[in-house]
Amino acid sequence: QVQLVESGGGLVQAGGSLRLSCVASGRTFSNYAMAWFRQAPEKEREFVAAISWTGSNTYYADSVKGRFTISRDNAKNTVYLQMNSLKPEDAAVYYCAAKRVVVSKKQSDYDYWGQGTQVTVSS
Image 1 (cartoon, one colour):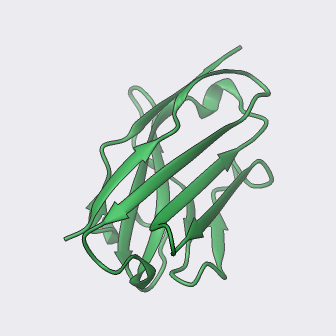
Image 2: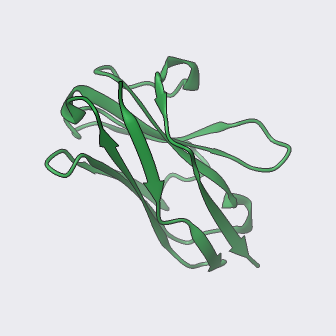
């Protein structure tokens, strides 16, 4: 079992930045690929970014490429999402997710989920 706790969400003006964190506990964090998904009101949850268990491979949705950066610190059991140049359409609940070893962009592949952190972007 892996427990995930996100933090770092909040209210920011368009063009601003936020850094989300997700702390994992329960199993060997370094064995898990990690990802961020988001869900806006009345929309389906969508893929944002993912990182391999080594941290050497990262993947992004086209909508955030060049603005968001996913990273991980296995010594701290933490994955981050640095979000720059935020837009109103980035507003959503952001979820951290974990799966063993092989990274994926498909939410159905992920076994463990955090409770989410709200990101609000004012125009």
